[in-house]
Image (cartoon, rainbow, N blue to C red; front, top):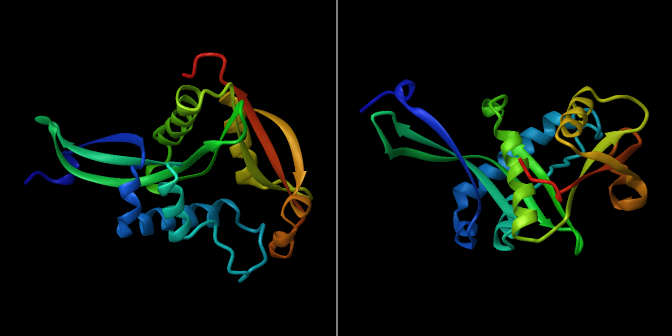
Length: 205
């Protein structure tokens, strides 16, 4: 048995089959990854102890059943036998859906923190773009990000710059209390959704 240090890691991204909705361990792990990531990235935006979580296993199961969840897996292969897999582990997910006749949309992009910095997050976004263009026949794609309006949130600003570098443009600002008045009491500060959009008419690369 070769040690993990001698294994090469490969990443695959695919739309989860409906049967995956019955894999309890997978669903619970994805929910944990999403909530861990969003707890970190949206730190300070919500009232302490409000109990707010980004998702739950039932919602993950719903997205999988609807064919809307792409999952990133790490596949460990023996260098001497590239076709021989030693593991197949979910490390992140992204929800992809149709927003309108012309626009696709993605959200709930989450990646296990231990796999950051290797290009997997970007690969997941590119997967969403390619899927919306080829499978949903969309000419554009969008996403919504939550931002405070009274101060600059360091992580959110880095995330905004990341998407701008990938060709996205901010096309709309929406007050959270107007779009989701039921959530207003959860926020510690005034917040807005910033809608980012990118044309898919050019080659997705």
